[in-house]
Length: 346
Image 1 (cartoon, one colour):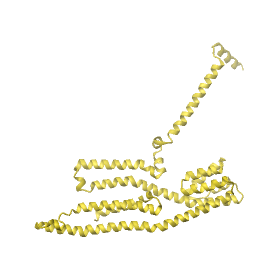
Image 2 (cartoon, helix red, strand yellow):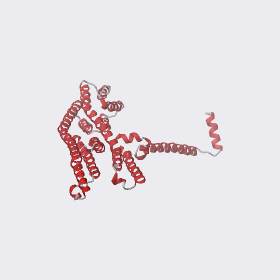
Image 3 (cartoon, one colour):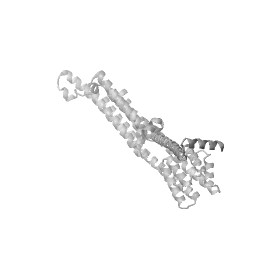
Image 4 (cartoon, rainbow, N blue to C red):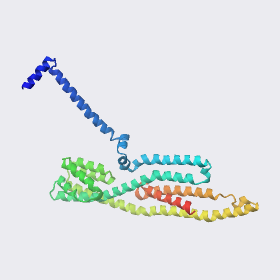
């Protein structure tokens, strides 16, 4: 009390009023508040767009398969430009017509741009398949425990201790949210958005709407589990039925490659030799194929084979898995087979 009175007397003698003190305190509060808002805005800017890419490049490029094109396409373009510049400076423009070096550089650029996307899409498809196979078992187990008298948070807590493969981390996160008293419907919507698959969103939407309507949660979970089982069964049947067409696409490419190999190795080669022999006599060279350029035709056929292999792979992916990007793995394999065949065997 005495120290407070002394401080008050000092402030009065110095002409400092209480209103001034409140103004100082208000200014300090505003500075603290502005500092907090600036930090929040700073963090927000670093969670979106280019700033997030600079802060977490690997995470951004791998969270969705198509994101990897942000890095792979510029790198592929750089390889193509540098390779073209090197060939022009070393050999001149005629190298484009007398050698396959530029074709090899162009193929390398395509592979650099496509292979990362094919690998990430293959990894994502395996993750999605693993989750969708475990999802019906998760719903069934939660429904069984809820029917035995457990509350939903307790049932999910016990289920989270089990092993559901790729789905396990998502179940643990759902358990954490419900342990913090997040409503069941909200937690399920977040659960589905994190998984980010068609079956998960479909099942979560069914469960959430039925729960809002006041239905028995256990019955709703069992209905969602049965629906997921049927969805997976139909998807498996479709894949099995379309597998034969994928095989046909691949075999057709191999037959095309074989026909080209036979044509270039026998027919064109024989015609070129016969034309050359006639040309030596100086009579009717053009009538017997003396002007056949085997290098030109081999290069032309190699381009045709690689183009067919690339787009046949996309068709196989669309037919077999319902997604053209999923066919990139077939495209890469068939393009490499065509390149090896023409560079070393044909």
